[in-house]
Amino acid sequence: GQQLNQSPQSMFIQEGEDVSMNCTSSSIFNTWLWYKQEPGEGPVLLIALYKAGELTSNGRLTAQFGITRKDSFLNISASIPSDVGIYFCAGNNNAGNMLTFGGGTRLMVKP
Amino acid sequence: EAQVTQNPRYLITVTGKKLTVTCSQNMNHEYMSWYRQDPGLGLRQIYYSMNVEVTDKGDVPEGYKVSRKEKRNFPLILESPSPNQTSLYFCASSFQPTLAGKGNEQFFGPGTRLTVL
Image 1 (cartoon, rainbow over the protein chains, first blue to last red):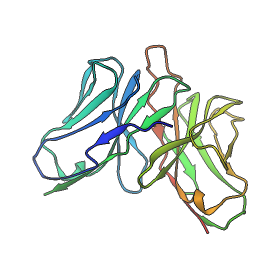
Image 2 (image 1 turned 60 degrees about the horizontal axis):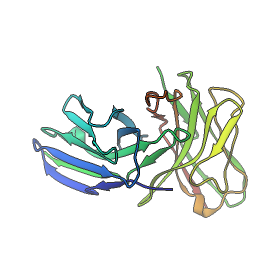
Image 3 (image 1 turned 120 degrees about the horizontal axis):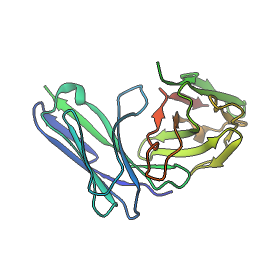
């Protein structure tokens, strides 16, 4: 199955910095989702996007559904140590409700 | 509390010994799914179920079976486990997506770490 191209693979930043990560696909998706996974836990949904061009915020997190429906980005503003984890994008084209996941972005925040 | 639960959380077994990993959700979700997570390969779907008695293969179904006899439960069965099935497994559930795409938000369980020797 297809995997989304997610970048960067990892980031090591200073507390207070802004973070940006993105996902691209060769196929169109109808839904983009962003998840965060912490060690020993399952992915937790952060933001869901349903329409091309949609920009949605959840606290310090902002995500956008690309206008071509083939990409999405996630921004985290003013990062804090508890932002540490692996962030995954996932796309859904409603084919059996199957989610296709990106490879993840490992975020490390230095206090 | 709305949640997806999995048991066991950790399991070490030997090649060929049948095992079942249980998954249960209390959100009345129609859709349930199993994923495996491996380093460098991300999350890959094994099987999914759109509703009771309806199951279908995902990207990597070989060596696995599932059943959906009740809405809340979706067990993953490994009839004859092999070392290449050593992985971290996640169950997920959601409502059925609408035409507008709502309901695609899948909620994940805490994971089951399986080691096959």
